[in-house]
Length: 461
Image (cartoon, rainbow, N blue to C red; front, side, top):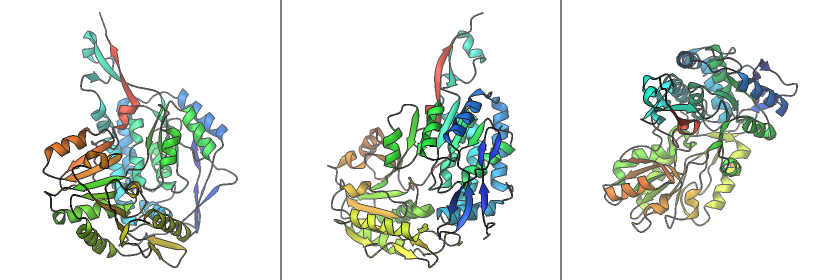
């Protein structure tokens, strides 16, 4: 375990280098202590930076590959702006409340995604398309895979550093990228962009623009395309803009049919609910069981109640930590949402104060009467699961609007229906955690599907 200097400066990273504001925003840890000062930029600064990114030339593809690889090594191993990887992990854990082992694991995952970005984007390329108009196949006519624009905006998430593993794919494809960091956890994008710049990407290729809501709107307006993370409010705001792809609530689920014994999958179910702190969109929010859900509820309550309450920087921490006031707000919200549900765990409270102004968010298990109960869509940033009975009459309708669905069944016809359901983004059949992610697999579709298009090119003698 390490500790930070009294206050870490986090300047904006504009097209002309660092920018330090006169009145920075304090970044506090889960106990309320100020650990960093984040420089916010006005909309005018945003507009000027985006104009510079638009004027910049695209770095050749081979050079981008080398720079992304170097940036991965720097992000994972180097001291950047005076801070070691251990300093970084400690800061993210204390500020975001994630278990430090989760942050440390994500460092390696994110670095690996950087190294493979040039490769993984090709999974989205149509089989009949080539990547360069100079390809010999274009002499007789061929589709060429090209960018839909030049400047890509990111309104980043702060719940998990892994969210920053996705947008570097835009750099791999030749975009210039402007990132508005979450004010909740700005350390990850700050370290990542400094690593990218140290690896050779110019200041006019990738920028960090901490700003208020007006500035965020200016970033989206000034870019060709954008990626916005957030809750239902963010999806409602940007979801109808064809230039913006949104990453909202996951509402991930598991379905255990009668021909599968949930006891054989209990480890997978528990890890899907509580793995990596239970804060992600790929953590399971709902478990549906064909039959009586009570025995599974009892088993989940027993397993999840045994998880320890520890500060996030403790090596054995597995649960998320938030400021005490924030934790109490979640508790009030959960109590209201669970009014008509049977509490197997968490009914007597989910807030475990640590005595320093912070609190562990303890797991909750509630049993619902039916698969389509409204609580099944209630996603909270800690291990909170709703368990409900499912029948064949409920079918795929009860599983709609799901980022990841793990289904344990021998019914191929059911799997057909689930794979064909448009609102289920990913289907894992068998004993696989909803948490499973891999660079070559789409998360909510491939980002490159959104960033790229095909156009016909014919070269005649």
